[in-house]
Image (cartoon, rainbow, N blue to C red; front, side):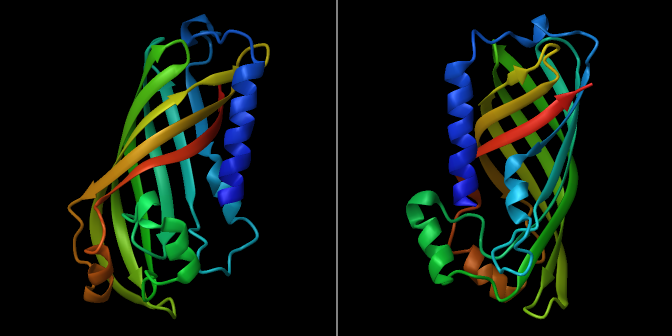
Length: 214
């Protein structure tokens, strides 16, 4: 996963410096009002399905450009957590994964459909917010269901839209985002004890989205 981050962000940096002055969305082909995108990190799940740390992350965004500045969308996502999401980088996140000291006694699966709003600020620079209600399923080590619950997951993004090709249909969006969650209900005690040790938010997660306009 770390390697994917490094490779993806390196490619983004090279593209930014290699590309000529970026065009804003208002200069793109106005025939393409819709877009579909996904985070490149989900590709890291391929080929390691049996690993405890495989998040089984699937996420897709379908968006519509209302005008050159405003974009709304639907977010569909599911993932599996093996430890609390609130462990920050400076808390030794990677060390916690390597040592397995904060691993859940099982898994937490979260699935939801939400909405997003993206605002173009200057050229390709944008800010966006996503709201994702989630249905939670807690599983033990044998994948037996323990409990169900609900969580409201929100994320806040700052990134840059870089389009490619003659008609600017293919794009990438390197970005940094922060997230928080609330109304986290019906958590089994063994999971709650671990969650309570950490924050109900995560800061400064790098990501790279890949998409196409149509």
